Length: 175
Image (cartoon, rainbow, N blue to C red; front, side):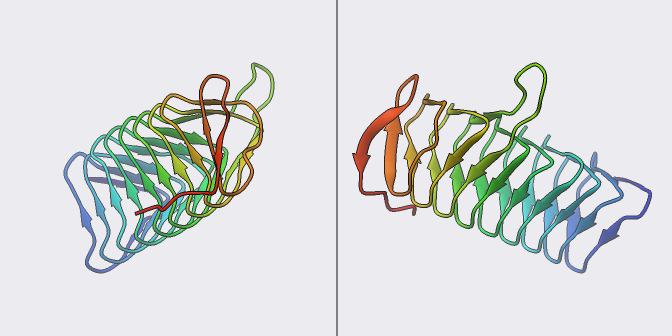
């Protein structure tokens, strides 16, 4: 691994070969495998990688998982968030115990300005969902696989399709 600038790796953490840390903190008992973390804070008991990129101004809470080839930029992930492989979160906030499916992305740049995405607690973002910022997804909401979310999603609502439309109002069980 390579460490640059002011890095702090807390006890019990594993920083695997091929990992680059720059001006970042990694909490206790976390594992980072063949990934790059820059100007960010990683909580305790977090798994990152392989081949993930945690970019500047990102805060990842405790017990999170950042999967293979995932990228996070200028975002805050609360505790127990699972972000699966080939996903991208930029300029986003993700509430506790939410699940970001494989290939899901935030579309945060409109060609001129960057916009934020707010994802509530216990939200399930289906695989290959596109969240077109600015957008808010309420607590306990769910997006179906392949959804294109252009408008805010209320709490406890399931949306599907392109563009996403309400399918069901009642939330889901995020196991």
